[in-house]
Figure 1 (tube, rainbow, N blue to C red):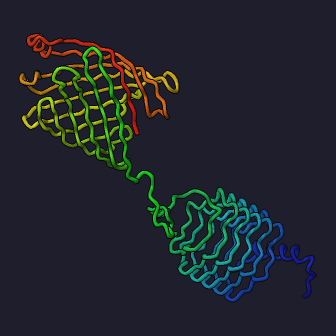
Figure 2: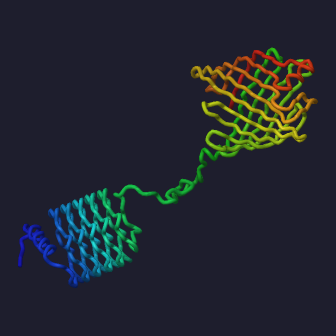
Figure 3: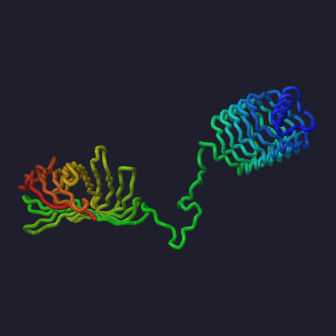
Length: 416
């Protein structure tokens, strides 16, 4: 019987409806050729819920099957595909049409589907809303080939919650249209090269791992009433994770015997958290001519208060604790007010060096600084105050020394 080409979609559609609604396809279907089947028409609303495809479908050829038409609303919920479908060829099957809202919830695909070829199957159409929640695919699907299957269409809202696809090989399957999921653990190589050679210049060095150095002089000023020069400086070398720090602080008299009292330390520095860093090393105190082990924590407390706490264990068993806090009150881009305070405590008496057990002294200073040269240089003027605490006050009175003192100061702080 000869059928004109222009009536093929209508006649093919009518035949398919009659076949799917009235007959069961449980017979032996090996070797069936659907390669030229045209299903590009409007198939929305078709009901395949009772379709029985449990027979032998091995060797069926769907390679040229065109399903680019409107298949939205098709019902495959009761479709039985439990037969032998091994060797079916879907490599050229075109499913780029509208397949939104198709219902596969009850579809039975528990038969033998090993060797099915989906390598060239085009599923780029609209498949949003498809329901595969109850689809049974527990049959033998080993060796199925989905390596070239295109699923770049809209598959949002597809329901695969109850679908059993154990044993299927999707190693090369293209699912670029689907969203979500977690990347594999080795998605990016540790050195950020992604397997690409670095060329003639070799591997670049990340800024965080590059060793650098710096010098910071936090105080170099003169106390007029005390007639002495105060200093505090730090130098370091290393990376953002590990550094060696050399630090010194103290005062130098400018009259009489011009005595210099300083506490210097060489320490290893390492971040402990986002706002806090740890230090550990050795120190030497010229005031009592003694060496010590040092450990400390330096960082930023809440409200941007720069805080440091260092403990020194001397060779004679004396334990010293230095506590300090500083805050920068910025008036504008150049003028800054810096109040700071420091406390010193000892674990036991040492009358030879004028030390008493407990807190010995407190120092406080307020500076008005002007930052210039990209904030690397900041001259300042200020007022300093020092007082003895606890038993140290009585000891100073017995030795005819002043208990409290204050002085105008002027100096500079800088870093490079």
